[in-house]
Length: 358
Image (cartoon, rainbow, N blue to C red):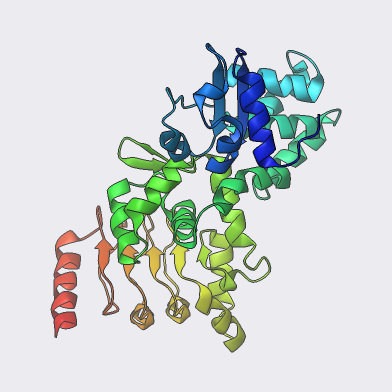
């Protein structure tokens, strides 16, 4: 049969299938037009027909007013191990000497069938030492084939939605949603609408009152930021790795490095066991977000006042904190739950607010 064009194809579907009971599966749909050309109306198919659509975009299904929507859960541990064994060993169970490293791969994939299939095929007939080496590499450099598939949903976002996603990736995964909404609103990113889109496209979930995303989606997002400038961390828009942050702060003595660091808008130094915050942080002139939570420093450096674009600072659970310097005038929000010497620090904050108002 020769199909001349799309309209002819639609006519063929209507005329040939309208009296037949069929099962139609449309996999990985991401545009409404795709469905309209294949299954726009129920009367195109005979009585008792079923159409199953798989998609990352929940909103698309809502537009179509489908009868039921099912959220597919990830594989459980046993299912994931079984799939990995089939792909990597062509057996139902892994060999005894591969059991522990197979468990590590399953935990890394965190229930995502795509990751298990790709990694299982890649690891087929490789030695156990090679498995361990690849697993260690994956923790820092994710598999490109997995990233390419996961990135499809990200590429479909608009620029503001992409920025919201990358902020969550680098700073706000597992954080309280309402706090994140306030912070992103300060940055004029329309977070309520943007987060709804991310949920609809299965890029994030809201579990209770906290944001959550799959570990591999977080790796994909961080790889996007990493690719902004792989060799010079200071030229990326966001940093979360202490190694990269330390590299920027240690080497920013030269004009070239400081100039490069002007693109850096977000810095995540939480949980780094820092006793001292470097004075060099004052040279990161474009910084808007600064997370210093759960560290052991006693005070912030005086140079922080030079961060004229800084809007948000978090000092949660900095139990050793004893004093604050003058802060930039444009700060819009400071989170300081569980800090040390609460009364003294709060009095300094009040003093700063009065100084800022004057």
